[in-house]
Length: 289
Image (cartoon, helix red, strand yellow):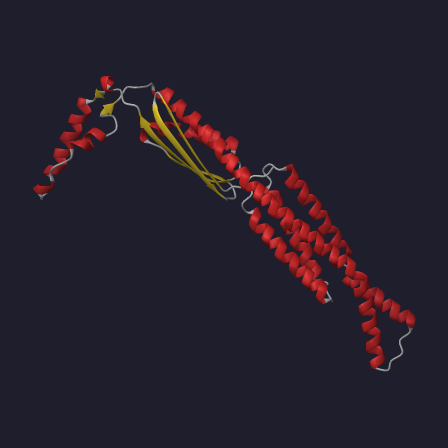
């Protein structure tokens, strides 16, 4: 099955260390781009989290956010008095530089909120970090599920477009004998209007040259082959966005050639319809991993 690069996952869990909330958003991107927003006390897990993400996803712009609310043991709170005094002294020093003494007060809560002033001492740092990373793995699993569900929708759309491409190819194939007859009749009518008698052998030679010039059998065969290959890619699944994008280039090349050889309105219309279908597929493929 294929996966979209667009998805969202949220994973919230609680344990003896506190409450963790992971949110991961991903959108389409040519390569894998990772962005992390982590609380100060857990910033050191970013390197490990990046490695985990790199092994799970291949493409997409992925934004990961973690919110952590630690459990606080009131009987085991440690107040770093030395750090608090240093912060107060530095704040008073800065205040002494200010001309407007009315703004010299500072909020004690800001001092308490400073990293390192209050330590709950409720858990070992490594245990908290490991717990955060385990939760991250669960959040990625949910994101991958969401991307697969979106990928299934994209696959349905693409298969429908492929079916319509096959219909247009069959339509052109069916009309080719009539088009050649129409071209032959057109040449004969033109010479009759001019009262010119054309040697049958020469007429046949001209018809053969025209048939060679407007022959699209090779293009139609290639289009059928591209449909088969694209179906195979979709059925195989995995990270196939780049391969599908390449197939769209091949489809587009054949439809352009078909349009350039057209001498009939119906073939022209089919060539235009093919280009529309290919462009619609290409837009959807931009979201596939």
